[in-house]
Length: 187
Length: 192
Image 1 (cartoon, each protein chain N blue to C red):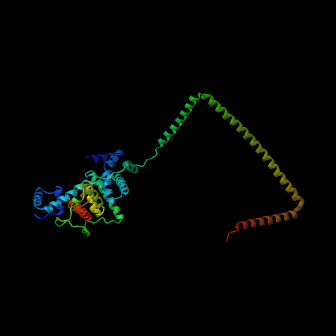
Image 2 (image 1 turned 90 degrees about the horizontal axis):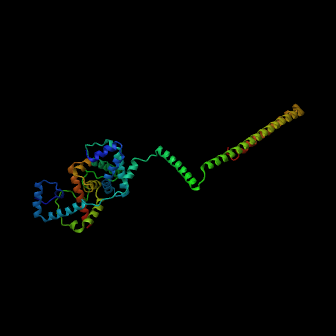
Image 3 (image 1 turned 180 degrees about the vertical axis):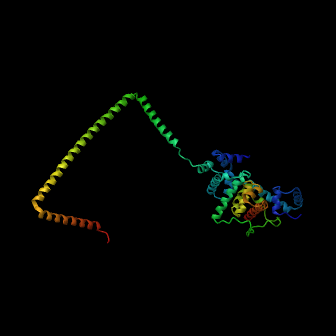
């Protein structure tokens, strides 16, 4: 039995300290995930709290065959999608074709525009990526954050989002190409 | 091999291709400067993406969440503890007072008891005198009422049955006027 499952078992036995340990372990990654998606610190903190409360409330329904981390982020993802829905932000359906201005993945790469690598230093580039991230469609942003902020594997992201692994990979690459394109446009 | 697609570059950079695919790409890269540039740019982008600055939760965040999940409840034994502590504290204060002032606790208690008894005695006397006065007032009131009844009886005998009828009618008129006057006064200002 892994560490998370032991903590869950202890929590279900009534040991409050065990759940506090779960919070301490996941508060940072969860806050980063939510923070990069909603873009407002206070709101992100509220949502992070909300996710832990929901998690505690449904802890008895957790199936130990699955990874707790994946399950936790699934709860967070549903909460964010509800928030977007209430705000009437299009969650960018995967079935829809790419919106105008987005470059399809097909097509060969080389171009003669100045490289972002030549224009930005690494630290500057990181900051620019974060500001550009807010401009890309929410679903692409979410997949990008899960991959690059939270270091999930494509398989884990596929499980969180109930999507085929191939689609997840494709969308993460699409997100990066879109960021690259927007960074180039700024030059 | 043709020039690379973006997804091929990302898969190559993330080492997610088979050895044969990697070999094909490397052969192509060796002879294509455009693709070399494209790979270099995405490598920088990839590095930046993998080391983005992280957000920090505030101190005490986990305690805040715990407080929302498990709200604090006041337990009865806490009240008992607080009361006992207060009582013990008072005893401590008194003890320290007698130690520092060197007063005798027994004599203080005896004096206090005497004062209490005196107050009780004086209060009892006052109560007894008040009761006697009330009895006296009661007797006087009864005698006054008997006198009034006797006087009225004699007056009725003097005026006779005709006088009694006239008096009764006068009384009736007086009470009726009073009643109607009061009613009118009460209705003043009200819209019918």
